[in-house]
Image (tube, rainbow, N blue to C red; front, side, top):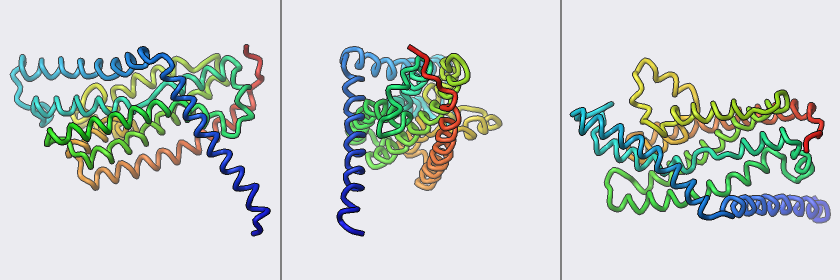
Length: 278
């Protein structure tokens, strides 16, 4: 291959790389434009689940007199609560709502000719603050690991990686649901229901091992446990390396399958787009 033919291709690759970095930077600046509001959102996402769990554990152990629940002591439950908060910060995001609103309002037209696809563009912008919070959560987890034996620094790094994979899956599911806006007036209600289900089945509110054995199939049949419960279990040493690698493999399969489904749903649904919104 001649250098003349390779050069334009290299320029195009570099341009796309630069464009994605610019979108990532723009997403972070947009999310943190109002720093106090951003801080309150982070604290709210951390403190509310922690408060719910702490009240539940206190009622069961201190008032109810239980010594173990689901095989875990009061101290182990608190360790789960603290560690799960770190991964809750990585979970989700509202960029699937942004995608839905672009379709509903007609704002999608401004993004159809961008170098990256609309789905990718919205995700890159929404991922920026989550990457920042993932790095911050990792730093906190590693620092705490020096003082708390139940948390491993090495496992924290791998657990954050699994949580990021969960973030990708979460958005892909939301992107598929957002295509409903091409057929209905909007998909807001469906996305809200999805988020409420995720809060329960991700392990954000309670450890999933508290589910009765006969109901474990419910959360094991979804990828939601990869968001919070899985990373927390591995970081605390309650999952073996084999279980962790199995979870990573499951995440990769979900990502691959949802990538195909997202691509197909948008190619099919965009044909209905008339760009008549304001």
